[in-house]
Every structure is written in structure tokens, then in C-alpha cells.
Amino acid sequence: MLAYVFWHRPADGVAPEAYAASISRFHHSLAAHPPAGFLRSGTFEAPGPNWLGPEPAFEDWYVVEDFAALGVLNAAAVGRGHLSSHDALARLAGPGTGSVYRLLEGSPELAQARVAVWIEKPRGVEMPLFAALLGDGMDGRHAGLWQRQLALGPAPEYCILAAEAPSGVHATRLGRGWSATIASRHPL
Image (cartoon, helix red, strand yellow):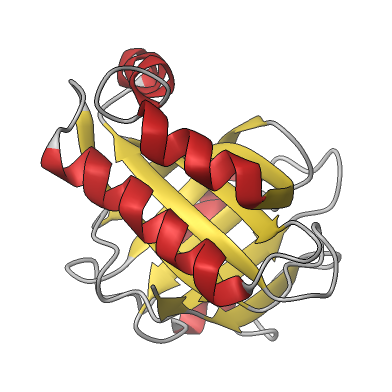
């Protein structure tokens, strides 16, 4: 299971409320007429992700079955049934960046995720067993551990979506050079 995660802001001069309403229309369009392989989507108001800058941003999650479904979603987003809501949103959009993540363990549900824990590892460090420990203490029914698969811009290596930060990401458990940023999220 994969998720395309897109962080974005409204263009200068665009009211955040109007932008949020446009985001909601696009997500409702996808939910009403889901493309093949599309499972769910959600948008969250997020504090400024440091890889996009310090200002608050929106964070979209598009959960799909696999890379083939990601291609179908890409085509469908600007195709019949979704084009007008997509283009209306695109006209209001400012800067953005995205990445593709794979679910390593837990649940792909987005509704309970009030916290995103973004975890960075030092360059060149491969520690797959250590990565598995990040989910320690995570309630797998209501939280998920995701790993970046494809970087379309700057983004952290791992993310845990949960109701609260699990013990596996506590500073005393992370290795030298690893960092975790805990960010509250508010569903749109």
C-alpha cells in the first residue's frame, strides 16, 4: 500500500479559507468517483513542515493500492469527473512538494491520525532493524508507520501517523544523527 503525500500552500493573496474549501471539493470529487486502486484521501492543516518552509501548510494523503494505482490516480485527477475541481484548486495553489510513502506496518487509516511524527535518518545509514523499532508502542489498529519510496522534493524518510507519538520515536531511543519532529495535525 502506498500514499502520495503532498504539502502545499495557497498562492500569495489567496484566502486560506477559500483554498481549504477548494481542497475539500477536490477530495469529495475523488471520494464520490474513485479511480481504480484508490482507497482514500485526507487533508490536514499542518504546522509548517521544515522542508517546505516555516509557514503553516496543508498536507494531503492519497492512499492507493500500488504504483499502478498511483498512475491511474494521476491521470484521473485531471480527467473526466475531477478536472474542474482539480483545476479550480490548482489556480489557487502556491508552493508545494510531495513524496510517495509505503506502509511498513499498522493501519492506513487517516481519520485517527492527529499526530505526524516525521523521522530523518543520517545519510548513508542503512538500519532496517532499527527502522522497525520506530513503530514500538504504536497501536497498529489506529496508527501506521510509512517509509519514503520516491522523493519528488525534500521530505523525511519515515512517518508515523497516530493519535499520539509512540515510544519508539522518543529521543532516547533514536540513534545518533536521527531526528524526530512531532507535528499536530487537524483534519480539514
